[in-house]
Picture: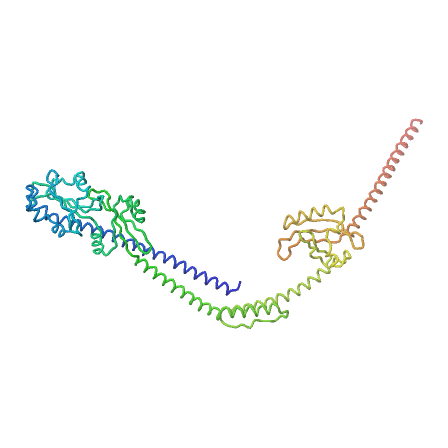
Length: 519
């Protein structure tokens, strides 16, 4: 692979690494934007609930003016129609922005009720379940003149905002004569007012409704699990959800506030511009760097490579590179020229040494044969011609063991197998080898496994012709045997002569003894 391709690969890798890094940074930044977005949604949900609480508190404030009033205190006792005519009319409720006004005596019996439609300004019946809810919940009982109750309740007809206070005198004294209730529905007009006040898109849903929107239904279980505020992405908008408890502390309403994803969109736009700018800057920088590398480095390297290629193909010694310069490439050319000069010197010495070694090999009495691990001949010393009568070419075309005596072939195969299996092992051998004319020569020598040695990578046989030596040893052995036989015969004759002398002496002694006895 060329340096240019390697550089392109490295450059692409760097750009991709930067893009991946940019992507990771973008992910972190976007997560930050999303966190900020969720924080804004959470704060908006709290703001909406505060606005609703303020509306309920405002309702309680209006109620306090009516419940702590001598006229109301007297009315609950005598039920005079003048109070009803002067105060309990549709205009009064409309001015108070309430739909419902209920008077209960101290026994929690209804004294007077008023329920209107704020839009049509007409009386309408009370919700069927409102009175029952108030009595069953014990909300109408007050033991303290300064106490009050306020909040939301869930009616069949909708979500109802309600405030309750004890009916007392204008001096805030008792005894308590009953309970006054103000209320109104959390209807579309009130929701619109809250939306305009908070500048948010808001909705309220009865908690126990069976027709909740899909997104509200999906977060209901998480809200039940104790999560204060849940956020959920809805395409180009993000919503926040929270539970609102009723006047008795039970969950009654689910609040939803929806915001456009302006922060997130701006974040995505900014990151997109950053990545595009970064990519264009990377490409531009890469192009400039590639041009400079091509101009200042690669062109010189290619010129250097071409000159080295020309020198390598030239069979004439003495060639040199022409590139000059004080940079690394110029110094590399100088070092290559020095290396070529050193190689020429070494090559000259090597050629001289090879010639000298060849002359030595040709004239030594030792013979060298190298084979591979299959016993195929790879080299044979020139002196083999003198020893066996074969030309080097003829001998090289044969299997070395094809010249070995059949009687020694098994032993030689065993030696070869052992040596090949043990790198570096040296073994001695003596065998007979056949001459080209059919006669036999006795050789002895060594075989060593140099298959692992770089530059040799062969099994090397080194042997000499000991035919005359063996013949002389056989002649000496024969003469020694003959001499031993003659010595044995002489020893036998010598013993016979000694025995004869001894016998003659014994006879002589006996003869003298007889002569002595005769005399």
